[in-house]
View 1 (cartoon, helix red, strand yellow):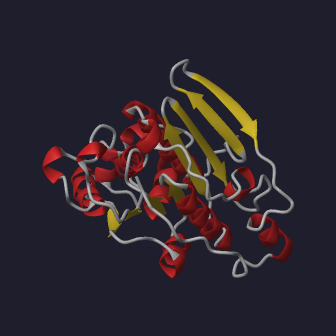
View 2 (cartoon, rainbow, N blue to C red):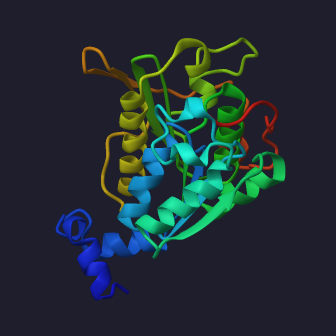
Length: 267
């Protein structure tokens, strides 16, 4: 139940017909897993904490580096060298002490990844490499969890939402796994506000999903050009031969899906 302080703190979103008291209670009962607390995860975590999501699982095994500060707005210069997940928990607790924060400063893979995905209502993929993205995607398929994935490089960003019953496929349908070196912020650069836009949209989609707000985002890949400020929308379709979601749809068994869990983690 909402108390007087809740009504004051969340008053502006409670005024929205799409949220109201019921939506706020849904938020307070929800658990969101953020995989990565870098440029995408920083704004996403801030907005979800401010919105009153009941439990935030903050997963990142990295330590803060000076090169992160240009875009990862959760952190401060005097925290360089500290674990991002612990710093994030500290700052977010100051913003909203009524949220439960679980900080995970170790690599999410295998059974550890499965456990956290299983406990979450919504998963945000805020990582920065293909191996991790495929691992998160496979785990979300196994446990039938909505996945909101975003990425950004240079002046371009993209975001999409996929959810059961995977009518539009999964991340592996869109981006088949490859060992080829991908563009990322380390080799191509990134502008801070660009990842801020994409991470904020991940938080928006998570809130809409939790509050059961009707959306046309499911199965849509939205591409953003930060220079022209233009969007392009593509409709995804399931690959009938996908080794991840096609097997799930055919057999309705998550346990037989492959698990890709090796490689570097978050930005």
